[in-house]
Image (tube, rainbow, N blue to C red; front, side, top):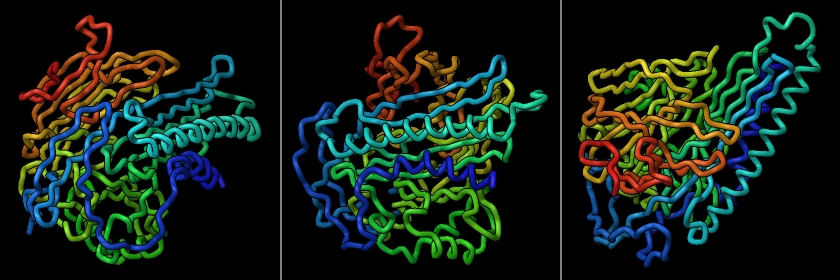
Length: 460
């Protein structure tokens, strides 16, 4: 009963990202052709048009724009301008910390008129999430009272914790993909963490079904099983029959997935499989390795981009240029008592490369960075002061070069995503146009940075 309560509460919160936007019918249409239109005037600089040659092989072409027939001139999508808003709520009874709730949502910063439909969807979702999280807090407080958890000796009382944070996986003028990372520790039941993807057509605001993106759904289970068994942290020795049963018995709107810059990623969580638990496991089907599987429209991506990485979940990218995906995982050792991180770990499955160091912060916010010249980095924003309740937290950025899957610490700066009062941050999504606060420069406002030749942020 307690477990069912937890699932119901979390489902309420996660569902807000899927409630807005009109879903497409569950049919598979013919592949769409990317139209060659003149871009509308927006707030960001338009990107030059490129001629993308028809490719007969996906090797070595994972994260470049995919083939378009007859040498059609295709406009590269532009990166969206988004902001993230944090909200938190603390509840106390005298000196007893009853509950901590934190959530974030993503909305448009610039370009709302140009992308009016996705702006509407994000605004509606943010409002629904706010109401949902407030309801959850009220329900938990009522549950604490009704169950008599505050009666008698309170020495063993555990603070109730609930967090739900939206993380951007892809944000361009074609697709917006968000992953909601939810965590709950209600004390009276086991901890729970779940991931949920919401994927939208930016021009129409409609939420995408998996069959809108993938042409052959029957091929998915076999490829996913292969990917799960090909990487050390993603999993090992999972029978294909188990994965087949999952996709067979799970409706499309129940599958956890995101439409990334380099493919489609699946997230496996609580009770997805009956024979074994692979909570926290991910598998990516890449555009480069399986170009025939996807609608071409969604394979047209920017050359440079940044992706927020959830801690302890694997991310996949071609780090060494061999055309195949490598696994990348960022982990953090969290001190539950004082509620801050003490140790960082970064892993790639290129010869089992692993980086470990002590790094104290209230929060780790890792980003995978791919530049136009093909370099790969991790930008780790470390929250040095706790953010929330209208307080700006100072951040430190630590940069790691991960070219070839080899991890090298490049340097650090007292710099972070631009802060907008109150509790809003401008998301760093474009390596060529990052709006950052430099805490050492004395600047009165955020400044525009780009990823420099050595990987460190450089003023434009």
